[in-house]
Length: 314
Ligand SMILES: Nc1nc2c(ncn2[C@@H]2O[C@H](COP(=O)(O)OP(=O)(O)OP(=O)(O)O)[C@@H](O)[C@H]2O)c(=O)[nH]1
Ligand SMILES: [Mg+2]
Image (tube, rainbow, N blue to C red; front, side, top):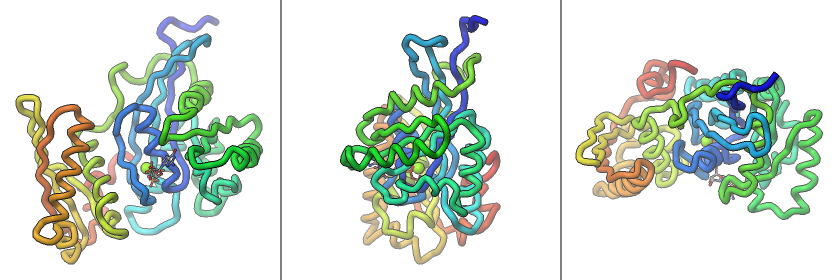
């Protein structure tokens, strides 16, 4: 049967893997803009986030694909309501997907062990991955010598019959188009799932929170980003500019002075960097006012988690 004129390859692709392998960097790269927070610290992503990307499939029928990527929190062991929420977000996304992209850090020794897919702490995610067609992406090849890469590709090629193993660099874009075509190949043919101009299901406010939260990972010490959340409280658009009022929520009163810094120096720096990143992301001038608030032990209280946006659909 010939494909209908409006048909294309369309479906959901969950991006899963260990923390810090570059899942969010890859999603931003594919969409060509900053949608989600990335950082050198593991467990940056807390929630599943949708990013829709349409690509051409030259010489194929259908000749177009609409891939609905779902970025997920890095798979990890851990306790407490926030960790649980993060784990469920990743497993849920993999379960709901048409295709799973299992992303591996090719510079990490753990990346050389496909067995990791079935390790105990990752068992549920491994199972969800294997229940679907999946593609393995070996990321960060910009930092791996070619001879070291070949055994890695071979090892992962053995993880399932016929599985595509694509070396790539989310940082410089190398091979990302090849990866996307390998994913598209596995999607069902049908009508588009989303309108052409839609890139995410998240509000601009949510994206702003992610962008501000990313600055916490960049500028605060080791522990504090994990004890923090960001909430946009006011949003005013006027004369082509956006004025944003946001609160940085911490867990303990002892954490507040650290975020504020000596004579307000830290929060000023956060504001400057946040404003620059927001201005770039939204393509118009942004004014940002930041405040710090203590919400005692928010990450262990289900009701506070929901208040901060971690809850609901996942
Ligand atoms: N050299 C290099 N670094 C990369 C590449 N992709 C991502 N990174 C870096 O790896 C770190 C982690 O990137 P993220 O995109 O936040 O990783 P993630 O998998 O989303 O992490 P979680 O959300 O914590 O699970 C950041 O410092 C990125 O700059 C790559 O292709 N090459
Ligand atoms: Mg991430």
